[in-house]
Image (cartoon, rainbow, N blue to C red):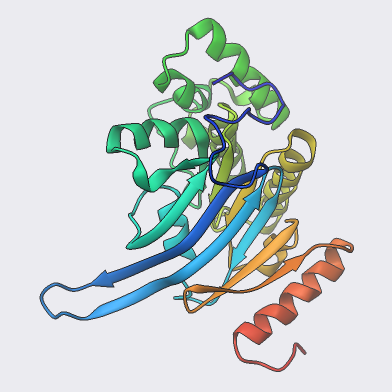
Length: 274
């Protein structure tokens, strides 16, 4: 892995079974939760298929209980599927041993969560450096990469500040910097604006657009918010554990936002939007 260079990361490993330009391919993914004591089972995902190509910015939406959070947990390697396959950069994550999977996740995936997940005992710069430090990079490689990504995200003046000394928006920018400093193949974001005010939310979403459009960062974001989703290139809606429909952005953001509202109305069983 190379430090942050404002270019999309090169593939890790050979592309064997996924389309050449696919960063992520999900095949017939099923997740069944069962209670061994009662024998009751609940199916969260039902043979879901999804492809995300390099340079895409995809929002995953759906009603509560649709399976979108389960999907993200499986993609992040935080849970295991009941059946199906998840291919990232041509590698089948389901076939990896635990140690190999942990290394693969660390090098190929970046994570942005609603709760920032910064370590209060480390400065913002030290938090951002963690992926590179864990990968054994030397300080002479780490510091320039950290400074470069912090400058790109507009938080370089907070290098030596602790999380509790900056605003929530600045903390989330630091979390984004930590997620992309190692040039991951895929950035996964789980309700990233959930703890931000409206101004900080817009700033973060514009930042995601900038990462996507300027650097080519591939982003998959789970969100319930149609305004957040309107910043992406594509919206995939999930209902009852399966892909329900997709929207491709072809017009301006306001028109795309209205399309998303109409889609959500359909998902909720309405006949339109007032």
